[in-house]
Length: 125
Image (cartoon, rainbow, N blue to C red; front, side):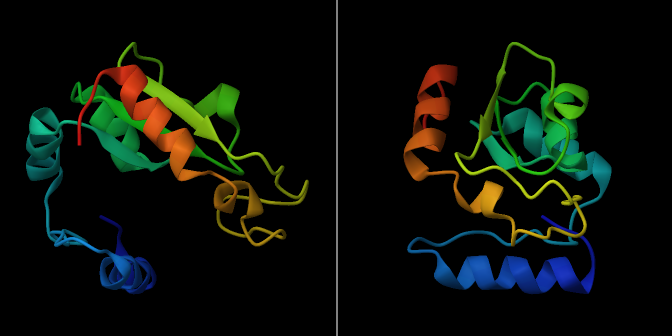
């Protein structure tokens, strides 16, 4: 997903690194269409964002990846979600839009952590 030119460039970079075909929906879905997609998805995996909260509200199983944002304030509160945090702490001066530590907190989230979260939800990829 994503929004705007900066996000579009990041999404394109991720799409190019994928080993399997993916559908790039960056800036292509309305909120109504996005909600409909989330209502039919097996699992949503994403960072603390508007789409993550929308997926939670739509009833999708959610693996929420948290970094510099305040977990106690922004984590989704539903039985069908699991929060994953990295092992490295963020720099104390980090904010969601400007990380002083190069998002090491997000980069330290492992594939194993995400796979464990998916399994705990009973979701299948």
